[in-house]
Length: 220
Ligand code: B12
Image 1 (cartoon, rainbow, N blue to C red):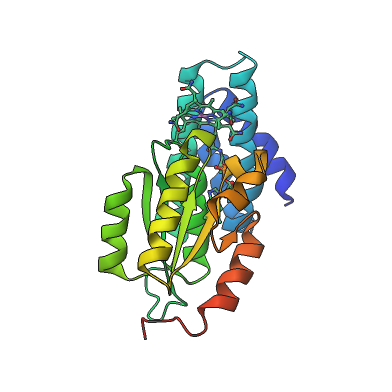
Image 2: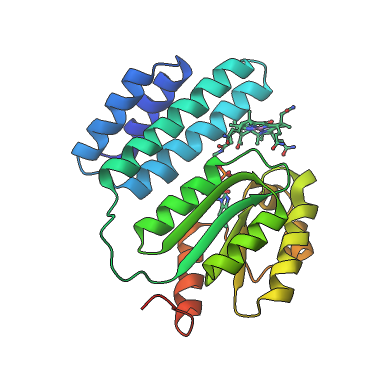
């Protein structure tokens, strides 16, 4: 089964707010051998982007957008609890994923967290709207090798920059990765936040992690 019909079906059903058929579509795709990564990146990601376009064009109410988001979050939770491996003994490295400032868009961060976990990383996912000082506290206690910060709205970029600066000042060994829609809309923000890496697509992020984890792994 190719991924395109899965996207077509999922988007059709999410537009109707039909969680039962969204669930059936995803369950069927898994049964037919479509991988979790493809479902996240080729179904959920474009479906949510299209939901945004409908909302922007006044063809979708805020309630319809909220419902679509909630359905997709439920699908991710279903996949996470049924298809992830919780018995890994040796992770490749530890990474915290978070959003700074008043960032409420959490799906991209969560998707990134899940996909890195699927690749064998020990991921601590802090979600949206996380105050800078609590992120720094978590870094002190968890001692991660990497931190990933997601930003969608450009008004949150100053908090991301502040967080990047504070992490780099206090923890020379931690590599900071940024990602999210804010940077794909305005590329100059990548230079502005001065992180160690900008993760545009997942494979590039995985390559960066692989190349930089070698001397860092602390969870033997
Ligand atoms: C759902 C949604 C919401 C929900 C979010 C709920 C939630 N729990 O996440 C709610 C209702 C809260 C919301 C609020 C708002 N939203 Co909104 N929202 C969306 C929508 C429809 C989908 C977002 C999404 O989940 N996308 C799918 C994810 C998977 O994509 P992604 O985040 O880009 O992530 C991918 C990559 O970027 C990458 N990635 C992401 N993070 C990271 C981090 C790292 C480290 C790495 C390596 C990679 C990475 O991985 C993902 C997979 O490739 C988008 C439309 C869109 N085009 O995205 C609008 C959108 C982002 N929202 C928009 C707006 C305007 C708003 C509001 C200002 C509306 C308002 N007037 O209140 C508020 C702002 C709230 C805030 N303070 O943050 C606009 C932004 C326009 C702009 N100026 O940039 C958009 C684009 C809609 C539109 N077309 O106009 N929104």
